[in-house]
Length: 223
Image 1: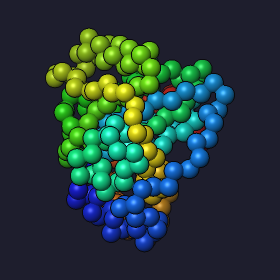
Image 2 (image 1 turned 180 degrees about the vertical axis):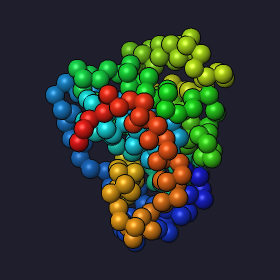
Image 3 (image 1 turned 120 degrees about the horizontal axis):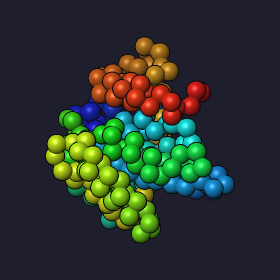
Image 4 (image 1 turned 120 degrees about the vertical axis):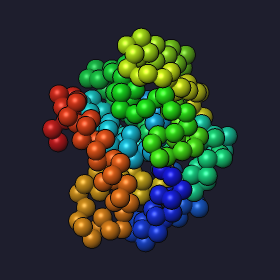
């Protein structure tokens, strides 16, 4: 999200959700993963958009918005939006590899955002919006590179892919008001939407999600 969007968000959401963007988000105790589950941490611009794409996929247990990649632990949203912390807006996907493979999640990732624009997705500009796959093992890094090579070979984009592969450092769960943001928007009343960033949701996220749901209809849960 751009600084203008961030400013609108602050005005509309602080009273609603009671959280300050200048204070670190309370970090809940880390729950154990469901049996056999694995994690994937990726960034592809505004995390509201990326979260909305992956939440309904079959095999996905949960999608959490957060920040990762910078040297400071527990950054705040306000700090990350300056573009100076080294963090990216990311989502942490917890998934069942027996239902959906890591490779397929990465394929969805590389076909639902533009991995060829450096530090930018549409109007959102800055290193915090970079296209990135975070890894914790060499196997995860190699898997991401393999899918990049696959997408490159298929010539899906006219320009080179600039997605970075980075070791996962200082992952921090984002403030509560960022979680399930587009889902909250879809369920909100007109009065509730007036307190949200409805312009961004309707103009940017909704068309992207609609296109994704149409393209991947057979891979979506029915709930």
